[in-house]
Image 1 (tube, rainbow, N blue to C red):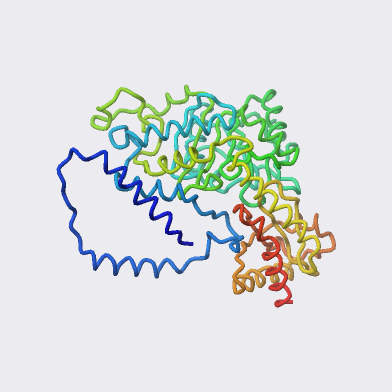
Image 2 (cartoon, helix red, strand yellow):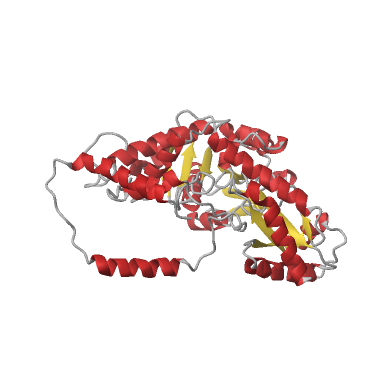
Length: 448
């Protein structure tokens, strides 16, 4: 967990940073070092009350450790503590952010997108749907039933009507159900989820683009979780076609704090048409005075934003460029391979039943049982027993009808089935599949 090399790199970076201030008179911020040391020991003790999110045996929620260079760059920048709302508060970090946006846009085939970093995917999606509402006032927003729950919340905040669209048994948006809603004529925006956070399913974007030709709606791609997989070489044909079509949508959200190896919170919103920046116009009598250049606060709903996020992301993208075939891409492919190997191993299990084939690196599986209630009870007990054995999973409620598609012998005596879910988003997971499966099978045998 602790690599002394990182502390050395941080010290050297801070020494270089200090060279930029040698013409200023020295001053010292006094504080009680011994008292601070005591408090920090208390903090470290309190922080032990966490799951080991960084470790491969944490195979539960979508939590991934930042890359060392991101940690170091983020920490180093805190000695300046830049604010990327305006150039006055973050000159260097604002320039870095703009460069990051260019690189992220190019990843999707956009040369000059309008965009900026955000505190996370929720804020990024809020901005995308806010712009959509300005372009199609009062019109309906639709997204799949497996889309992130924040879309329903966001549209409520924005005062826009929202309709969830049913999904197929593979977790993708049902295009026939979408067309039925489109026929009503009041849909302004369709949200295509590029890897939903529950099942990892990728909505069929090419089919949605075909419907846009007839109905003229706006398409927002929520690629908060799956966006980086556009670089991967191991996608299936359907997912590959959907990611290849991303250049044709109107807006994209991606979270560098997921597969982009960044600390929380670092989201990003991108717009293909830069003219939507007109909706952000505002004035401030004091914020913008040092430069006639575009301030990021002029194209953002958020005001103060941590420049440290931009510094960390820029450093990471310099070390590992967002290009096919590179080190970063290999990490993504390792995650895809880990999920597929894990799913195949579960097919041989006496106790477990994988559901849909993983499109990305999320695997959902049920615990075998005669009926849906028994299966759910066993899943909850297995979740707890696995944690006792230092294997950390996640639970997910799915409609019994969906689960029975994969387990037709399951008697239905409840509306939902509690299933297990593993997010294999650490490239190290690929080397740990055998151990993870062994721990899972041992834990399942112990509750049988």
